[in-house]
Image (cartoon, rainbow, N blue to C red; front, side, top):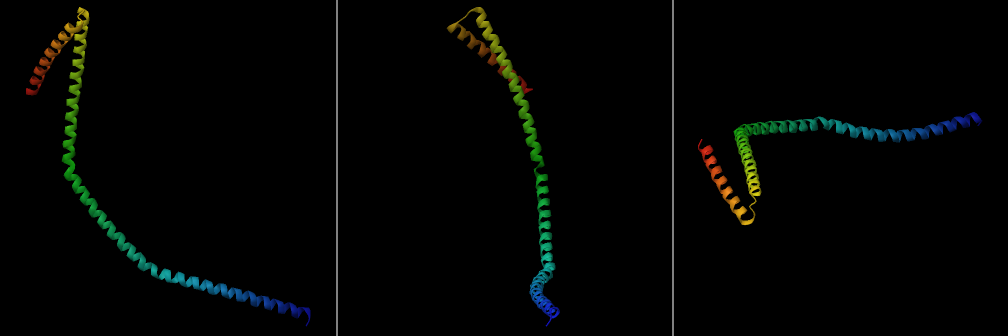
Length: 149
């Protein structure tokens, strides 16, 4: 045999070895593609079941939303009542703040009066007590007038 024959023989053997490896790789690829085919064949059924479940969830959420809206409509008057109570308590609190401020001012005036006249100790305390009792009577009378109006 000459060199040309030996070269052709080596090329043939190499081609046979490469063909064997390609056959194994293509068989593995065929197995993978068979698994993909099975998965793709099952996909429409799975999508149908997912769509049915999604439709059921949407119907339930619509029913729940309608129920929540109905309950909120039923509670709306309660929220208006609570708002009115809050506004009334704010008005009452602001009037109490004004009354407290005026009482503080008059107390300060009484303290100045005691300090001006030089009364100290027991006489000053008695005068201040008398002054507070007179102011309290006047405030009660004012409150009775405003409540009866």
